[in-house]
Image (cartoon, rainbow, N blue to C red):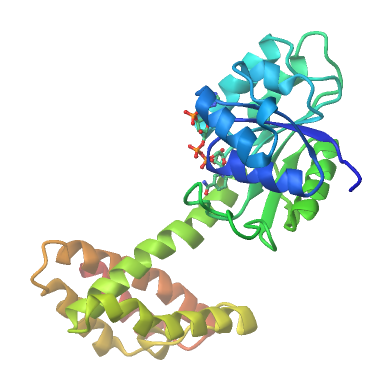
Length: 304
Ligand SMILES: NC(=O)c1ccc[n+]([C@@H]2O[C@H](COP(=O)([O-])OP(=O)(O)OC[C@H]3O[C@@H](n4cnc5c(N)ncnc54)[C@H](OP(=O)(O)O)[C@@H]3O)[C@@H](O)[C@H]2O)c1
């Protein structure tokens, strides 16, 4: 296979290891692995099939790489980059990336002032996927068809697009200033969906369904809703009592949740009501909820 540019991984955790493995499989040359603990760097280098490429010092791992990925936790990205820069550890014309969703490429600004180096470009390349454990992607390619948000210097963005495609992912460019809201959107879509499902399963169990069966029972409904959002979009995909203006049913829901013999009943009711108030806006946009019915519903949900 034609060998592509070389890369280094700084921070050998869940993302660093998997990224390294799939970059190598896509033809990029593993040049250096370094982490807070040498054992993590060694394990990652072995995992990627380059056991002789692990280094104690992060700048030693980065110095010969065309592309450097700083995959430490977000709080350590800026400091790790500064440390490498201070030791002149970036190669001339290197491209430096981090993989954080929340932080912008500007966290890597120190790489540009790396003494004696010129032409270093910085960017961020964020896999919009959840890598829950180091087992993720042990079989199969976890980058396959996922989206990757990229931003940074134009040369780095161009490189990131190529890397994402080589990994099997679909790149898209975001603005540097918009990163924090982009990440908030991802948190709502992924993390808060988990919390929402947790509430739904608890209510299903409270209704008498076995908790162990609750998710399987809800699954076709969840999948159908996703299909509807995909095919008709929002607000058209909204159905249910708020879209239908069934004020009495919503009131009964709230009373039933509040009355549960569960110490979190108040929190569950509050969550239901907050989501309901947002749903009123969607129903209004759909055009199926009159202004009067919306006000009535809002009053019920607000008072809880
Ligand atoms: N996990 C996800 O689902 C996910 C998804 C998208 C993006 N990301 C982003 O990917 C990046 C890495 O996340 P992760 O989930 O892979 O984190 P992680 O599993 O905690 O791995 C981070 C690794 O960095 C090493 N490290 C910590 N501080 C360091 C330092 N000062 N210098 C060098 N290495 C250091 C850790 O040390 P040891 O050497 O002690 O092992 C650890 O192995 C983050 O920017 C995160 O926002 C994560």
